[in-house]
Image (cartoon, rainbow over all chains, first blue to last red; front, side, top):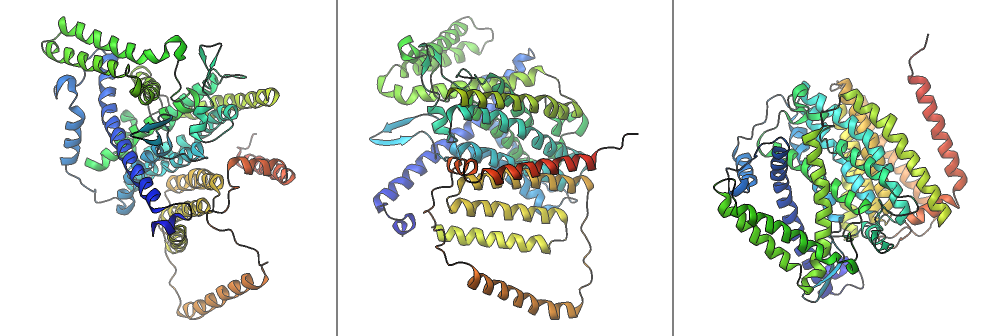
Amino acid sequence: MLHDWLGPGWSGFHAMNFFLLSLIKSGIVAFVLLTTLAYLQWAERKILAHVQIRVGPRRVGPHGLLQPLADVIKLMTKEDMIPSHVSKLLYLFAPFLAVSMALIPIAVIPFGGQVEVFGVKTWMQLTDLNVGVLFILAVTSVGVYGVALAGWSSNNKYALLGGLRSSAQMISYELPVALALAAPLLLVNTLSLRHIVEGQAGFYLGFIPRWSVFQGPWPQIFSFFLFLIAAFAETNRVPFDLPEAENELVAGFHVEYSSMKFAAFFMAEYANILTACCVGTLVFLGGWQPLLPDSLGGQFIPSIVFGLGGAISIFHGLNPARKLDRYTLPAFGVIFLGIAALFLIPILQAILLPLFWFAAKVGVLLFVFIWVRGTLPRFRYDQLMRFAWTVMFPIAMVNLLITGLLVALTS
Amino acid sequence: MDLILFLVFAAIAVGCGINLVVQTHPISSALSLIGVMGSLAILYLLLGAEFLAAAQLIVYAGAIMVLFVFVIMLLNAGAERKPASRSYAKLFGVPLLVVFLGLIAYIVQTFLPKTEGVQFGKFTGGGAYEIGIKLFTDYLLPFEIVSVLILVAIFGAIVLARKEID
């Protein structure tokens, strides 16, 4: 049966292997993705707290590390109510649409190169489409409906205004995103995310990485910042979080949602941020390509970073600022030192190094998202729209033209 | 596998198309249209036209239909009232519809050239590269003419929509 479905060239054994491998990979990716989403929220609360000179969550578990778990239990056990005045079918469908469209893009995102685990060669990626970038744009553009429909079906002024703002904002900022992504694609000349990363391998002069932001003939620094700014708007984040501006719209499009349906929107927002950071990393920052070549000790950077982290943790554990730190910080220090040691084992290096570089770059971008939220005030709505059409759009267009011209002249 | 997927998504497309006409509320109709667009994109994907599928989703489902939904939400259009259906309309309408569909099927069967249909999984020229090459070599003139046409349409929209200046 399977053989007939998959056509010639697929023996039953191969098909079973393929399905098993895909199943295992999907399981790992789904687990890591959902854990990341849960802890992204913890990281956001913690970093925001420190930006505002507070301590942040620290009651549930050491340093509040079990807070995400507590939040999940809280959201699941809350009363799940459906207001009587809503358009029921769409009201139930909207959060489902939002969260599924936010989680799908992870399927085409490559985390690393080809690896061999227990004799099985595989790519650290679920699947590679040759229109990968367009796929992500398409899926995220369908995700707008989740927010728009939630706003409309709630039958509430504030929710409707939030939904309207969101759809207008997301259509407007899709243009700068697409134009900003098009320019680096001209450099690498492909749409497949895996080949995009492979096109950024190597170094200039032995130490400047050939990532799109540094790559000749026209380094894509402008389009990187355009992409980053537009990504804030696309994911409805501060300073462009008009769809859920609390002081104007109560909570915007999700004001009528409670319990798990609210959690679905929450998760969709974080998944969208993660996707935006992954795309930024892959297209502009060279994906899993290292910052330094191995000849300059690039393969030791993870060990140094984790080793330093461990040393600082242990130092603060020995000079504790709070009572509990005496036990928790040395434990974290030992864990970090253990991770640092793992990066020194040659067999594991092939798998761990690409993952480290990918995770580090995505982590930096995520930190920027949170940092900006703690720093910048919200735009006014007309400012937001004017900014998209009169500032970002022309700059993105000119940048694309210059890139195209220089690529055509030099190739 | 291809056949099953084709049947499923063809059925969804037709179902959404019928729902589009039957629904009385504009939002439901617009959403059905999005369903049609989405399943069409998947049919393109099944035929190997990956670029076209992605473009279909981005342009139609992601941009044009968002504008439709946006306008419907902004105008807050309610459900339209169905006119009382007359009995003779049903009496003549249903047979006429069947005859019309049969005629179309007959015309398609007889007058269209008998070429090999596109087979699932056999077509490989649907990537961005192949389409780009075709657009800028064989179809350069139509492509440029269409872009000028769109530019004219944009000017028309601006002229129609601008405020009168005293």
